[in-house]
Image 1: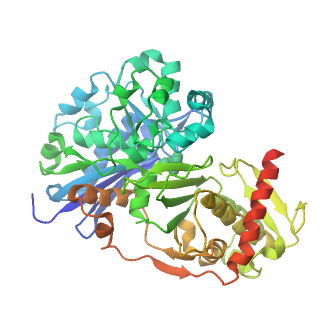
Image 2 (image 1 turned 180 degrees about the vertical axis):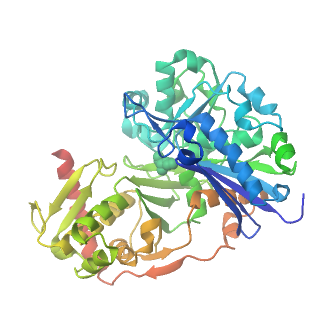
Image 3 (image 1 turned 60 degrees about the vertical axis):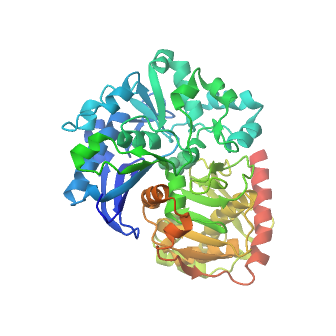
Length: 525
Ligand code: 5FX
């Protein structure tokens, strides 16, 4: 092993697979990506996914496309001049919830890979299900009901696994495969999550599932960090053997397989650290810690919380924390993010963010008592679709001015995040800090509203590709056993961009309560 130690992180996300090599100071040395739609057009995916022609709820991705992308990814790293012999450890991350079905005999193929051939040539017969169900699939409502029933209802399932039954979660997906294709299930030697599938390719044998990504399956007891047998039984027979036992997220799984040593000149000592889901890896990449709440403002908006206790909620998810086994993380997904903000910008501000920000700045905090909820597509939190506008006293069809509409949209989106974050136990204005990431975190006018709604200072940091970088940091964390805080201490501090105004809590506390009442009424309707 050369003296200078490098770390590799790989992220198999929905639309692409990316990799970065970082040095001991976590500075990026090499970065490459392979985009499924354009680099592998023969698989005819759209955004990396295939929507079933007969049932749009069924959404999959060809597993062999992922393997082929992996071959290309490694070659692209070679082209950048990467010296694999310096990589001391690697880890991976992937879109959560998706599942990979290894055919009987697949592990033998993984153990006996010929270094002079591509992976995709050698693994083309290793999968019993050629199109893997992914997180966008929503075809398993029946199986979700069955899982909830097996433990006494949605609340009981949420208490055990951190989430009520969600269609995209892996348990119901496996149950559907067993119910609809029993012979395929029987011919399946092992089942991986997409993240542990990435680990398996590097390890040359089936890698265990880590507890953080495992908690996105509706099968893991997040308190004991072991599979919950009644839930396994409710899914399919012999599932424990097919899944293998889950491991802590920073576990060292063993040395990289000879295939990579011989083909790419990796050191024989390079260690594979357990791979995890993209949201847990993002928590690592964003350096989230106790007292912070991260808000990612993208196509969909996501809120991440560091939880010391496993708060029980019916909406949102509690996952095992990838860096601290005692802790948890809260995850809230909002489908209507940037596209909804853009729709209101186009309708009210001639499609210009400058005009949008001027309009936002010309209305007072609290918007004269007006409030709006805007959902272009079926929202998860709350479960609503459509536009809902309220003046000081009642529901209205339209607001009196464009600027009121603009502020209503932004305030409504952030108040919703506050409501669900509070349900997780987040206390606004108690010295907690907000880390804003994602495309819209460039817009300071939006961040000021975020600071006011949460009565907290807002910070930003360069967190592009936080999941991929998080997996590289996790490789170092797993290998060295150093404290997470010491590992990330070399990274630049987040920068404060806004403080809340002194009257923020006075204005937004009552609006938060009003939002809750409005949502309850709308849901009852
Ligand atoms: C989280 O629960 C999700 O379903 C998504 O964020 C996927 O992880 C995206 F890859």
